[in-house]
Every structure is written in C-alpha cells, then in structure tokens.
Length: 177
Ligand code: 2AM
Image (cartoon, rainbow, N blue to C red; front, top):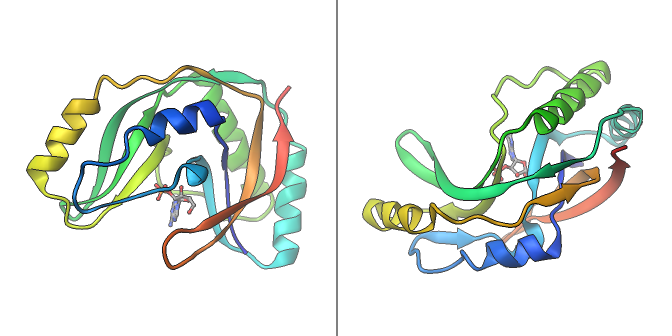
C-alpha cells in the first residue's frame, strides 16, 4: 500500500479551489475530489506495517485548529516547474500536528523525513507550462483567499496510482480534541 497522512478538505473549499483550474496550457489539473493537504508522505508499506502506523497515529493527541488557505505558487525541479499549488498558512497548531505525526511515525519505525514541511494543496502537475503564462497565472491569482476551514481530524490515505489520476482512499480518520 502506498500511504500518506493528510487533511481532507471540505466541499466548499474544494469548490473554491476548483475555480482556479483552467487557462494554463501544459497543466494537468487535479480533480477536485483529489485535493488534499499532505502532512507526511509515507510511501509503499506492507499491510502489517500499515497496521502499526495506524496504531501509532491513533494514540496521538493534538488540538483542533483553523486553517487559512490562500495564494498560489509553483514547485520546480532542476529549473523546470513541476506543480502548481494553493498556499496554506503556516501556523503553530499545524506545525505541532505535523511534528507529532512525524514523531509517531518514527516511533513506529519509519526513517525521519528529511524534506522540510511545506504545506500546500496541489492544483495541477505541470508539463512544459510556458514560463510567461505561468508567471501571469500566479500573479493573477496571488490575492486568492479561501474561507478559513476548521480542522477536526486528520486522515491516513492510501493512494492507487492511476493512468490519469491517483485514487485516494481514506483508510482511517483520527479525531483532534
Ligand atoms: P504533491 O501533492 O506535492 O505531489 C500523495 O501522493 C501525496 O503525497 C501528494 O500530495 C504528494 O505531494 C505527496 N508525495 C508524493 N510522493 C512524494 C514523495 N516522494 N515525497 C514527499 N511527498 C510525496
């Protein structure tokens, strides 16, 4: 199973984000049902490890919090833009939850994540998006702000890679207190 820990998003926010799709040649837009915020990518795990991970996550205690979403940005690899995303405000409770998940997963035997946590919601993968068009898109949507959302649980997702898009399934939800 390919696993990751994340936040699913309310329908109102998905609808709002979906309005950003379009008007950018070279963008493969993520379908609205796939929008999510990754807190920790895990990767391929055998079934028995998935159970240990679930157990570790279910003992974690953290508080509910609200999350601000706004702005758009681009990730690039080797100078080439690879993905377009909506920004997520960094906040102490979000960082705290992410840190607790990291600790729980390390206790369950996973190697430490070396990448810095950069909260984002991927809107599109980019193949040869023209630089000028991309820059114009980012500028046009930089003032984008969505309603603040209430985060009351986090989720262990499985991901089945498909030809067009991945299929994400919520395997377990963990309530925040
Ligand atoms: P992305 O949206 O920025 O591409 C499920 O695949 C989630 O895990 C996606 O949100 C993806 O982030 C993230 N992800 C996929 N592969 C990853 C990797 N090797 N390292 C970190 N995150 C990854």
